[in-house]
Length: 473
Ligand code: HEM
Image 1 (cartoon, rainbow, N blue to C red):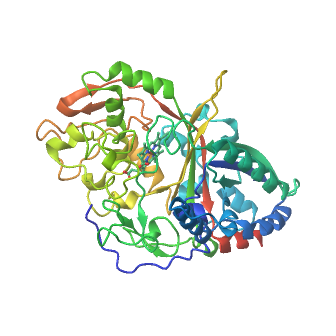
Image 2 (image 1 turned 60 degrees about the vertical axis):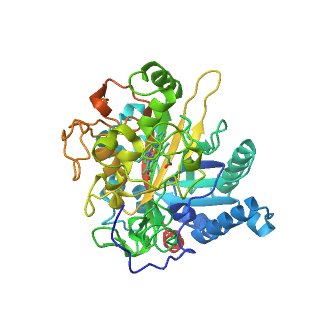
Image 3 (image 1 turned 90 degrees about the vertical axis):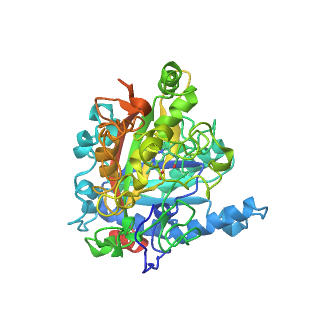
């Protein structure tokens, strides 16, 4: 969408910012080890040894380049292979406090932790696993590993997590619990409902070059100010600079972690039973809830069927759209489709509350613990931003859970019968009690079951390398 032109491109200290923040740790498996700090002095000693092993943005990008070269037919060098295992670490406000550094002035939601605001997000804390309740978590190690063989990646990542814990004295810290994520074995790169994941991600000013336009990297992929993701002080899209409240927080980013259980059988059964009258097939019905077909092609471009020329592999095509106005708006992509709710593009105006101001960098991974006797599956959702309140929390609370947006020009509710007053909540992640939507020709979907349930989560801060050294001092 048209937006301000970014004039002063920031210089990114790639050796200082952790690798997961801007680039994402390329991974086939990722272990999240949540820990509590017992003896701060001992923990600091051990953390000091870990800091040189943390995967930075620089290292992660090198690996990304090597992976691209490999897919172009060039073999990995041993130096590339050394970067295949990637470790990052982040701390809750409680953890930072235990290590004796001030976090005064930090994001208010980070300060109190996710559980305090869970009801506002629409969660029932009763659904949360016990490790996430009662504020037990001081920090998280993220151990990510790439391998073509997902089982092997998972085993190696678990071994690496054990080796990592072995480097910490038990007197200094203890594991509280862990999550094991891996690519969806049935369809790697797709979340467990079957949709291509990671299709749309904002480009970051200073990191990605303009290819398509002065303010876009790929067509339709806006370049977003660094200060929307990292505390500098760096410029944000709206509202001046993202200034670290404490000096040690420079080049750090807030990490939101959510354990989201997905009811795959329920989702499939619902789409099969209810598609008639709304779409031609269960898949088309499901695509309307998401805003993309399972292959990643966007309904805004391909309302009738998936288009292999716009699928997850076609980055120059699969984001090259706006949602359109008036009649085409709902007949192509419903207003409440997941991607339209969480990134409404030009449905909302520029300036405060704009779609660009609410961009987040997603870095999650699927999990699947189902077996013959039960277990659950879903998404270990991770996103990075310079403000939790203005970004993740706003998206979940005021966009996904609400049934009344967008109301900004050029839309006028009820103008031509295609824009209902209340187009409905995000049926994928919306957590409101009344679960419905009104689609094209005012067809009402009512009492839609909840397919995604939050079963835990916490707010963290991912410090820079310099910040980690300060925490370890
Ligand atoms: C289990 C829960 C979720 C599922 C199944 C899911 C699924 C998807 C899918 C299939 C896409 C489109 C492909 C892509 O661009 O990656 C997507 C995009 C996106 N999702 Fe989710 N998601 C989930 C949770 C969340 C949450 C909790 C948030 C934030 C509050 C979120 C924010 C986004 C954003 C910002 C995009 C990109 C939209 C765009 O740029 O067009 N998602 N999601």
